[in-house]
Length: 439
Image (cartoon, rainbow, N blue to C red):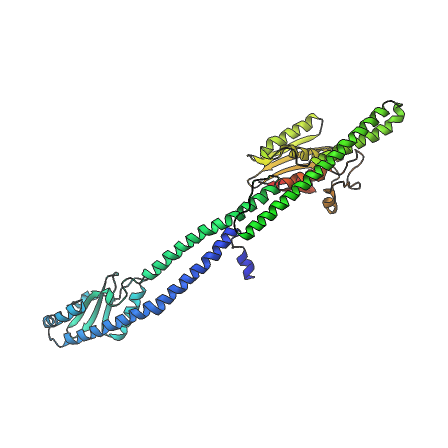
């Protein structure tokens, strides 16, 4: 459960996870070393230095008590004051601080204060105003005495030097490691960009670089891309050749049928026209998305022109929504063929169709809806396969399809890094087909 919760807050990118792997050990080591240094070294040194000072103060207080008067005590303390580097004086009771003073983050002062009060019960107050001086008020036989001396007598002068140095060099090494790590991750990013571009129908220049494993992955990607491109090229050439070669005998059949009686030739001409339509569909399928290179296209303007062309051709098509602005890298001819295929299906199996296009920051969605019978949910996956005709699902009284319409749309969507989603139209009650392309 804990790891599932933690997973939501972990970085998703490789760079972020590598940075986390780098930072966590460095910070952990610095914290452990800092705590060990403070507890085992700084605390012991401060405690030993304070104990030495306490013994000196005990001697001074005893000498002051033997003097009799404050003036005599001060005269008697003068050699000790010079030897111990202290300033000793007597103050009125009203000038004695009511409480100790030390800053909340002053760890060394807290250790020294506790040691002084433990070994000198007559301590009235301890003052640690800054990092340079200390004042201790003690009760003596001649009244309250103030001892002022350098802080270096009870604590290390610069206890933060080790920690600051450690943090500085830790940060410096982390920055250097970040720069090196970014250079190591750049080949992986380039490989990911090349693979993503190829998935969206674009071929960008790429040469394997980086570590041995990354070079191996890059080489495998190039081999895979070459094989896919050859396969697409061979499929296109094969289907185009077959379609082209069959046009000649079909033309001869038409010429031959034109010379016989019209009533006898009519059913044969219908079969020839059907074969011609099949060849045209095969040719469209063989072209796939090979026509043109990806370019910056305004999808709203493109869809608007497709709808206007369909309306001029007599189709009952309406553009219901066109929102968003900007351009997308598209093969305009392929997108036009895909949308026209969806409109042709809508016209074949229904009476009217609506088109909507929404362009957001993350995706492009082109939706075509009709008022036909639709496609059952359990057969939608089958309907996008080539040469599949769902006779029971669609109305066949208005013409027979080849079974390549939705397959062509699927190929076009996948070539742009998108998908074709089929559902039920909420407004018209028929089929709802969405072409969704990530930006």
